[in-house]
Image (cartoon, rainbow, N blue to C red; front, top):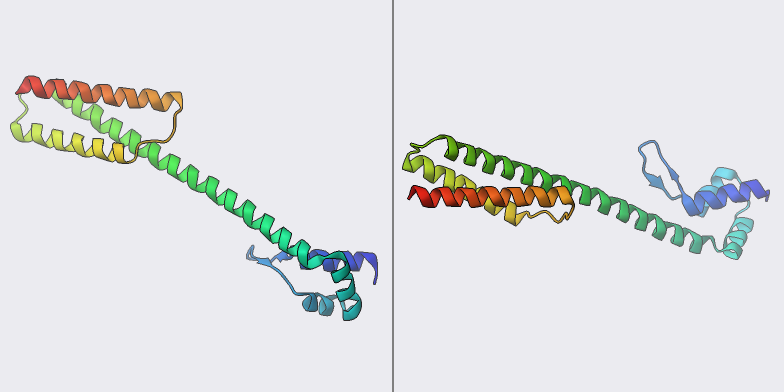
Length: 160
């Protein structure tokens, strides 16, 4: 068996190939023997001698590990984006609530109750989805939100 055909069969068996849909196809040695029209006994002998089966298993394990790591990074990125959106929405709601409280001296009791409920709901959502990120800008945003909450609490107490 020629060296280049042997390597093609080995690579096809150990690594497989990607089809048009991007799926990895792992042909059997028999499939490759038919494709390359080579003697089965020689191919199986070389395969056994060089440990193709073990190589294939190691390749698949490594590929699976790399795919798991990639998927994990994608999920972490999605979670970060969700946490950031929740933080931004909560901050916006707190800011708007503070703006309404500061600009409207004659807020009705129902209006104050609605603002309080909205703020409390936003606070619960934020706390339940507290960002796991410890970067400086996220800490500053959190401290700003907490400051706004303190101001809202002070205004509520002074309103009676």
